[in-house]
Image (cartoon, rainbow, N blue to C red; front, side):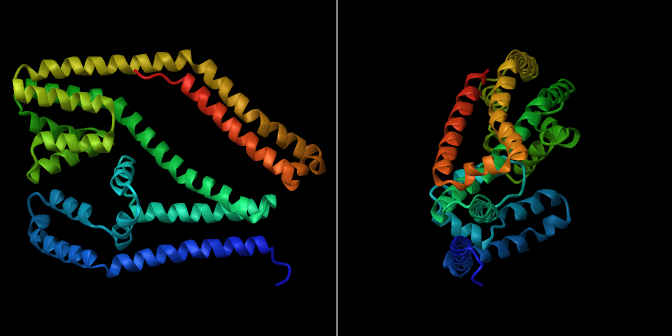
Length: 331
């Protein structure tokens, strides 16, 4: 027992405190009157749509019930977080079923794991390990969500002109725009297909086409889809040849994609330089650590070297951020 590092014990207590706080939030969410009232409403909704879920329109009814479910932890976090609606919208943009509760638990696990790793691997003081662990632990989930959103938006933007062309062909063949949207949901690959299926379900459940489309813009947050929604909204108010309008929009979106690829090719040298400059210190440290571990160990055992390392990482992060902004272009 005497061989246990006191810093590890303190971080363990810190982790247990976080787990206890999450448990308290969960219990409060279960016992709250608002949660009980919500569960009663959901029970009535399941009963009301049970027949619909077995018959025509079953997909829409089942998805309505799925979206209406909310865990007790989620309902409690909605009251504690400063802007839960924005966080929920951000999680929805990933296209995954990530709830507020799951995201909070992942953050807590990341913070505890990073703090323990900093304390055990580097021998940092417990306060510094906890602070750095909080920073790293909160950054990892945020970065993962941002990455999933970016990948999904990129894939959607790539496939979206084909979806518009499919709508144009449907309009030219005499189909109404709603039926053309339904066809996109059936024919296109995800994420375009799944988003248009959600739009179709919203329309079947009573939303107007305009409201369903604007709801989708919150889930996608892409300029291309906003152009599409604005085109449909303007056409509904003023009239005109919608097929020609959407055909021109498809051409513009393809031109934007070509411009992005051209800019990516022109800025490839800058991006390569940024990656090399960012990776070089870590590569050199790995080489020195392999050749002379005792010499390199000073960097994470001496308190002064630890402070210098943290400062260097911060400045490197600032430099990488500035380089990324310099080679990023908005079209």
